[in-house]
Figure (spheres, helix red, strand yellow):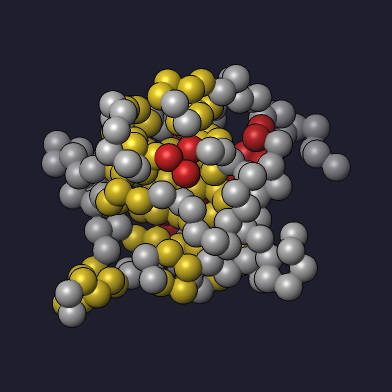
Length: 211
Ligand SMILES: O=C(O)CCC(=O)C(=O)O
């Protein structure tokens, strides 16, 4: 049962479709500045952050961010050719999962955490359309710390790109069919000197039981 002292999550606003097939729900200040600061401090301290490497044309490169994959047992996931090691839910990550799941009406069973140490860290263009992910479920992204620009561009190149400024406490839900038609990225921003932490909640189809 939900404890009395814990506030109910703010519901998400209705979806917007600023471009065909790009379906977003944007809740600015979804977490209060105080709660977001508490989560940022706790996650920065407690998450077992990893440095991952990718090999491009035979050369090994460190990814420009720190990452961690937390999930329920059986919710393994591959991206960028990396098989993520599942870490157990930390206290704060699980608390955020409960609130984000309630706000979105989706039972999220996994989260990719990304720590951008400053504006030199980034995420390249991609879609979250791996076959392990439930294509009917939205993907929900909570931003903590420094504000950064989040960009969308059409997969086929047609259609005008879109930029959103994601700030401390903002929650963004990318709803189907967004991943089919649009890529997203977090570009470098050299004037940003503070860290940003992002949690991207997903629903993985569990192996074996089709859940
Ligand atoms: O940090 C962000 O806002 C982007 C994260 C992202 O694109 C992802 O986890 O797939």
